[in-house]
Image 1 (tube, rainbow, N blue to C red):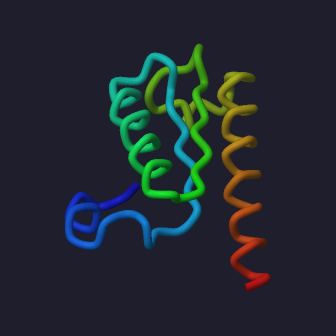
Image 2 (image 1 turned 120 degrees about the vertical axis):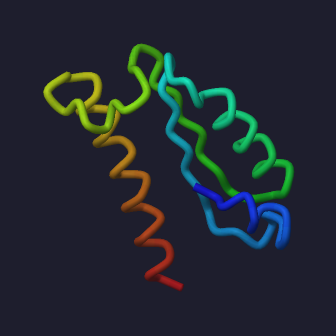
Length: 88
């Protein structure tokens, strides 16, 4: 996540590509959506994912098939960003 101090001091336009995963019934989903909108408005390449039927903390619920699929999707997005960064 982006530190609020960084957000205000440096702005987000200089930030790296980002991926925000939100739980559909998570208590922080609205903040994640707002963060994604601000990143996009600052021309940051951001992927904003929402996993509608999962609660906050779903990354620790790998026994649930939906949570496992969501975690795999997030891991794939991180892997893509690492590959792009390594190519630079």
